[in-house]
Amino acid sequence: MSITADNINQLLPQTQCRECGFSGCLPYAEALANNAAELNLCAAGGKIVMLDLANLLQRPTKQPEKIQPKTLAYIDESVCIGCTACIRACPVDAIMGASKFMHTVLTDECTGCGLCVAPCPVDCIDLIDVKDEFLPRNHYLASQPSLAPRSQAAEHAKARYDNHTQRKQRENDARRAKLAQREAATKQEFANPEQKNTFNPADLIAQAMAKAQAQKNQRVVPNNREDFQKIQIQKAQEKALYSRNMNKMRYGNDEEKAQALIWLREYKATQEAKLTKK
Image 1 (tube, rainbow, N blue to C red):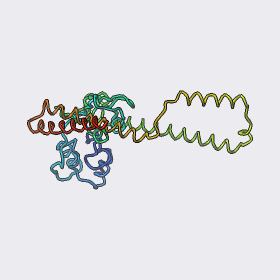
Image 2: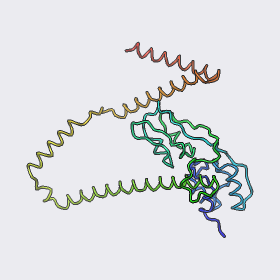
Image 3: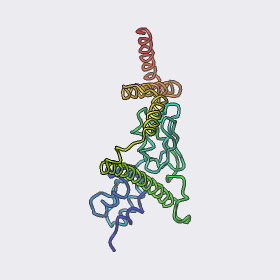
Image 4: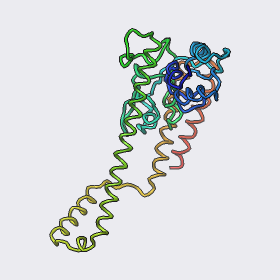
């Protein structure tokens, strides 16, 4: 019997962490099925997954290239600027929040993939080590409650990932449909120019009044919007660094405290210099 990518995918932890060098668990499984990848690349699965893959594929065992410790993402809500970058990066929708509002991690759904850390512009996400043997902690989406905890966790994570993928597809389809509707309306206007030229003066006045009211109610946005956003991000990054160095002064070892003290002194001097210039 030939081994399919689906057979292999069932053995993977479904964290979608990409530590194997592929864009997800299924692409890695497909590469293994085509004998185009080594069987020791799954960092989240570690030695257990490597042994199962070796047994399934009838290949010699290998030491895992990397073993990823079990971690959960933690967002420092006092530093978070609500940019939604981490929400877009999470493959299992385990982060809640909205634009300009602080975000929080659903710890029972987090797989510890770490994909949310790099996109954060203010470095307010940490990966905290946990003692869980398998992640995520929730298993209620598993097909059978009688499965082993590892399989339950993997099936739950896969279901969350599939739901995430389907949601994004629906959003993309809706966006394309809206664009197609606009294009069709534009073509219709060009196809019937006489209809476009006939207008009611009362409608024209109403449109002008509505436009004027909208402009009046619209918040004034500076022309240098990108520069303004960069300044806001820079301020948030400084705040994050300040908070981190203050924590090192309180809870760090001697070396960390010394480094934090140097940084805080430089920071104070910089702030005093800014006040002097003003």
